[in-house]
Amino acid sequence: MAQTQSIRFRLLLAFFLGFLLVAVLGLVSLWRLTGYHAAASHIRDTYLPNTQFLGDLNNFTSDFRAAEAAALLAAGESERQARRREIEQIDGHIAVARQGFEHVPNLASEVDLYQEFVRDWQRYREGAERVLTLSAAARNAEATELYNGDSRMAYDKASEALDVLTERNRLSARDASLKADTAYEQALWLILAGLLLAGAILLSGLTYFRRSILQPLLHLAHSMHRLADQDMDIQVEGASRNDEIGEMARAMLVFRGNAVDLAVNQRTLAEQASLLGEKLAHERRLTQLQRNFVSMASHEFRTPLTIIDGEAQRLFNTRNRADADSVGERAGTIRQAVARMTGVISNLIESARLIEEGADLFVHPTEFDLAAVLDEVCGLYRAMAPHAPIVAQIGERPLTMVGDQKLLFQVFSNMMSNAVKYSRGKGAIHASAERRDHTMVVVIQDGGMGIPAPDIGRVFDQHFRGSNVSGVVGTGIGLYLVKTVIDLHGGGIAVESIEGQGATFTVTLPVVPSGYGKRSPE
Image 1: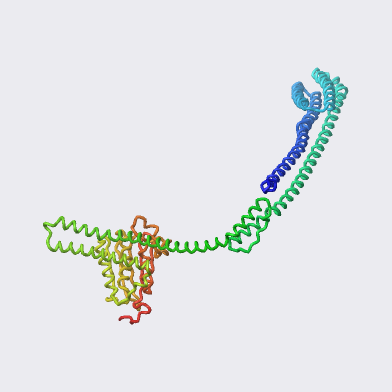
Image 2: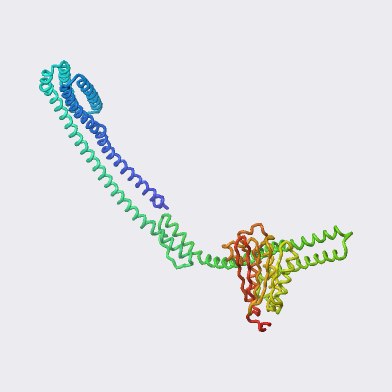
């Protein structure tokens, strides 16, 4: 590929030409703006100060003439002295204005007019001093004649010279302003013309870039998308070009040749990835179940093991003096704890099977007494948690219904375990059961920490735990299993709770589940 035919070379050349154009336009603009700045500076540094100083001279010379007349007409010595001080003050202002004008660079003709004014004013000033001297000597007639004669002529001549100088300054300022306006207009039109030229060149460059570079690139990109979508019927343009686009087009021809093999390999990889994903999900599920199992086991085994250890320690400490009744009582407690551990192991195994393989495969409905199940659950947790009083209120007995006794025992055991665990010894736990027509209603109520309002709708989700139970051991699957088993029995569960005031769980179960052929027992 020739260096001069590459897109990089052409873009660098276009950038250099654009930079050169901007530099030329900038220099021309600076040149014209410099001329305008010079004209504006001349107005600012010369004519604006001159206007101020000449205006002050006109005002102060008129004030001086008026002060001279006032001194001439003064009624007494004190008034004459006051007018004299006023004249001296005005004379100082005139000197300041003259000094300011003399420091401004002016044309030679204006300097000559100013010198003429200075000479005429000096002559008037000398005459005015004689008028003041005669007036002070009480020679008012002579002073008046001099004031109206030579002094007036000298003042008029000085004033006329000052007027001519002022008019000359005004005309010069107008000419300078016109020059500044002309310089500004020239700079403006030149800059506008340069911008139009730059815009035309830029538009031409963009048109060339679009036709020569952008459109071929878009075509190649569109072809690449079609090739990625496994569309092999594409036409690759620009393969004969000797620049980067030509190289890309020739590379696309190679890609198209390999696209068929790539599609086959991609399909094979997708199938393998799907299989690996399923295996990974299965492994994650097994890992999570294992973690849940370990967590539940460590939590559920802790209490019966503590009971066994405590009773065994008491037996050991009283081995020499214990009677048969005491030994029998402690042995019975140990046996209850062992039975509890056996039940926990069975429940954990059943829980894992329910989650992993589906609860509907393990539901074996039989006729049983719900009151007896609740009595067993309450008795078990009274022994395990003597610090949490459990009050059972069961109506008529027996409460005969049809269902899976083992699963429902696990349901109420989980609910009672939560009530004990989250009550933390705050008040009694109430469990009630009654029959209402063809429905069994079981209520378990505690006065513990309660459930935050935002969490109530999620308490039956798998692995969900309330936001206020940090520090309390749990896995978040107990209520999920409860809801699953109750749903399988065609029942329902509801919860009411206020955070800090406990929770009430209400379970409704049909006496005879739907599809069970036996009539409801009386």
